[in-house]
Length: 257
Ligand code: SF4
Image (cartoon, rainbow, N blue to C red; front, side):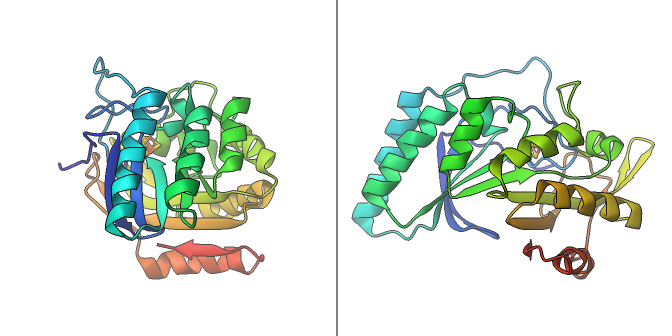
């Protein structure tokens, strides 16, 4: 199994399928996954019990980001987006809002046309500082992998026992449509359980929660790399286009990656 764990605060730039030339920011410990989910498809691998690490401080993030942006600016390197992702859930950082404020200042100084994106699993939307920070970024990209509670728990394995699709949708409503919803479509087995969020029942339930949350855009994608659970299958792009078309017919903007 080959999964990816980043060994630094700043990584890339990489060419992202969805975002363009992207410089990554990892607010999680290096070489260790730290997340409020343990998704069966996670490219970081499954969480390892008892393995911990130290998150970078606000000063460390600002210093590393400024150093890289300054050098890229001097070299005339291309850049489309600064993306908060990395070894887990970025909004778990207790200084997330302050780090976003620093990033906006640095972006404005070195690359004023570059966007700032955050890839989040939307589990921290009960924290007002996180919501305020996400309102400040250009691409607030929030995960929701199923409209059915049982399937969402099976795919995402949330650590919080009170996690629910319903409360996640309520959290998303705080952005009044100014966010992007991201959904992973897959099928396969997890132990002796079948997982498939592409069935008609699943897609219908998912469309209902998309309608309630009302994002400005929806991004759907499937497995791109090896997954920690190897009994999962990629969903073909043509099939995802049919799912996207159902949502587009309701007036939503949908990207299929
Ligand atoms: S939310 Fe992202 S980082 Fe966390 S387990 Fe899922 S895929 Fe991995």
